[in-house]
Length: 270
Image (cartoon, rainbow, N blue to C red; front, side, top):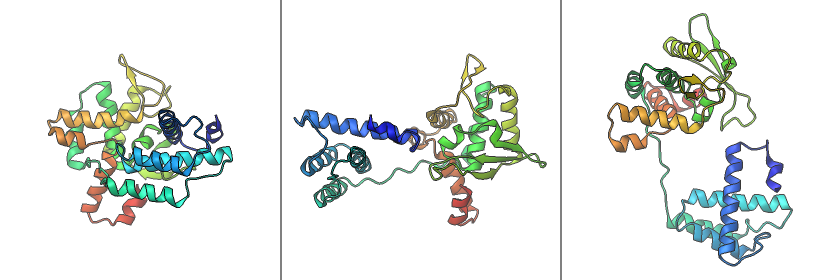
């Protein structure tokens, strides 16, 4: 219940992570005969981290440590997580299981063209073409893409779109950034909007039985449509598996690097 104080201050995904990690710790304590996990002893935290490190990635173990820390602070309890023994336990976890971060396979321009051509001439294909093309050109995260609303897009005199991306992982206060599209992407988006109609404010929405539904898409839909397109064009299963909801952003950045743009410029763009 103390976590309710955090509602609105953190992203929903962060809150879900806190709840899941605290639940994992409480379940572990119950299995090990620790009936009252809070406040937590330093020895308990260390044992939990080392045990979790046997099956979980170091990043997951570190996130669970942060959740334990947050509970103690919310309850006004002495925080054991800054003790040196806890730091040493985390070092053991990292050294025992080094994990290289998995990079999503980039949906570069070459892949984008193949994916767009493979989409069927259906409402779903109309929506997916607009999403793939827009996500690539704006270098969006999947959460940014599904959060777009009609009012965030402005048609310019040159038939391109000016897009306001209101909130992202790197912009927690929603100040937003401005990005622009090509004429082709603007056309794809407008064709989708014409089919969807103006009664639904979300730019991209689900389609059920051939009709648009008034709610935003789940972020998992972005991942699914990229992987489905990769399967449809006959890519190797390993390549299909390497694509994710971030592939549009990664691929666009790779293309910009090849064109000679420096990393600072790409970071500003995305």
